[in-house]
Image 1 (cartoon, helix red, strand yellow):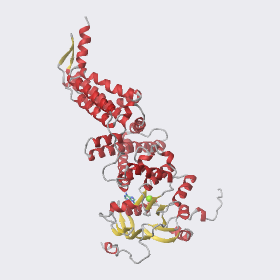
Image 2 (tube, rainbow over the protein chains, first blue to last red; image 1 turned 45 degrees about the horizontal axis):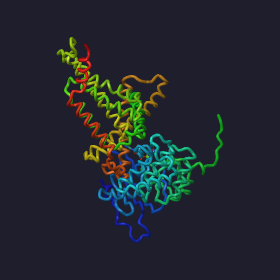
Image 3 (cartoon, rainbow over the protein chains, first blue to last red; image 1 turned 135 degrees about the horizontal axis):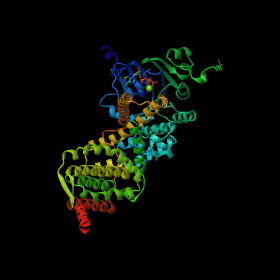
Length: 266
Length: 270
Ligand SMILES: Nc1ncnc2c1ncn2[C@@H]1O[C@H](COP(=O)(O)OP(=O)(O)OP(=O)(O)O)[C@@H](O)[C@H]1O
Ligand SMILES: [Mg+2]
């Protein structure tokens, strides 16, 4: 267990201009069945930054996001959220500043109506009823889903579900948003609306995605994961134009940066 | 599997019913929960062979279903689906309990048949009452009522999660069934072995999903109790409903109203 030593965090970075919203050092994780998922990931994300985490299937994107929430415990390495080290004592407080939108919207929506679902979080915070209602309306309006208030979440379309799932998180008023594959299973118009919605927010955003066009449109910075390691980290337009790098990581350049290759028959 | 996914749709409808607006729906959930509880206790506590004394209790579900504008067909189907269980429980009785009981002058019947009838009747009554409670109140409101009635939060949360788990189970069953049917070229692709494997996979998938949902709940500040909207005070109508029905149930439990009626009918005959 030599890995445990190099994963510890130093003292909080005083003297620098800001406390990073997210700071991850030497994160290692393997699932209970022995599947290695992360193999020493280090990252630093500034407040207000929008970062895409891209990588092929199984690269470890979802695992990284879940580790940030404290639902899983790293085998080695440390996590600091807004300067606070993530641990049993700080988990509840840290979760209040994090909003996680899951890969499957269905996993996030469990109450009988959309409004009830959005109200679930604020009620857990112990807010008075009128404040809860205010937050519910505001969050649903922000995602353009106010009309879906009384609808049953499991009967909504994929795009509507995603919007409500984002609203459930916004209603908690977190400072950091973690989004896992937000554009998966959305049609082009719903996808466009989602990008506009996310662009309009001022939170620190971490977006795990295969959708490199989304990364390019939404995120100024891109981190490439491959087999549980960070293989590249830098400005999106540079990283996403590096075809050789993307190829090595099992990804394809975003369509908008690909030279049009006419499809020939036969 | 087909049964599970059909029941899933019925379950979805129950949520829809619960959002209707009728005199019964508008009653406070606590009044309905308590009245139903008294009903259940009275029905269940009758002696083994009681059949006639149970009959007046049929009145309650009939009234609730009609005032609450719930389709009889829907209720009947749910009862029908559940009834094999009651039949299985009760069917051995006529075999073991052969003692003859006179039911009318010159007519007697094996005591086992009476207890069999009694079991089936009680089963139908209690299931109907429980279904109607959910269909006129909705699970979230019931859970909240239980909490206000000082039922320990752990049980209430369990109940709520169990209820959701049923929905999840139904959803997963629907999906898997569709996937199976699409790959079995219209032949339904059943067979015991396939059914068994699917059932195992179904439970695992549902469990995995339930875990993910629980995670999502934890991340939104869930600490073991699902907090509802704020409560309101009981009105006179609620109290009248509760006390009226409870008194009626207790009277029917203590005084053999059914038998008196029966005797009156038989006695009136020449
Ligand atoms: N619950 C689990 N149990 C065991 N192994 C798992 C589990 N979840 C993920 N893994 C494994 O961990 C590795 C990383 O998975 P992860 O879900 O983080 O990848 P991902 O980058 O999000 O992939 P995708 O793009 O498909 O969502 C994979 O090899 C995967 O098989
Ligand atoms: Mg993933």
